[in-house]
Length: 246
Image (cartoon, rainbow, N blue to C red; front, top):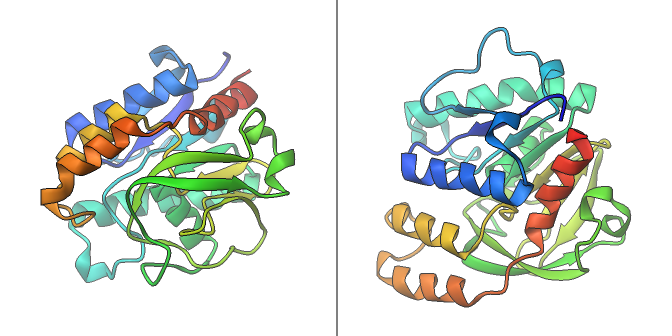
């Protein structure tokens, strides 16, 4: 691998951030030395950062919502959002390899002036039944992914419509826009391609008081995640790394 992947993390909780980073490495079949990890809760993007130094950009999830009113965002959430948003014009203009996971689809939609809101299509913590669209069946990132599969989700906001110049790749009954592509190389998923049951158990414990679910249901949610058969989404992350890291 000639260039590393830039991995941007937004989670301010160290246990959650470390778990997510380990999952990206595992599911993407990446070695740590083939990544540059930046926790945006702890540092700003370097002023001299150049996309040409990287094979691609992967943005993890986080507790923030881009559709929240400015006065409802903490200073940290606003700063993290601004950091990621500042990269998007260059990424979309250059059609630079990008994979945004959960929060990333909100970032992409917001940048493209799409309708990102909590009006509809939020999904409770758990699994959702995904369906690959006709366009998705020919997309290289979905090679080897079955037409129907389950994925882990948990989000308050969602795309309400397909942004301009985007291709719709995956849908679900509760949330129509589970995966989209802008141009040829800029991707975003609403579900978590890196997540497995153990990882979601960690997040359920950490975010039990963040408004995603009633705290007293945490044990039941963990049991549901443990019983789920979720394997297909990680293939998307692996395909992204294989396609752009070679």
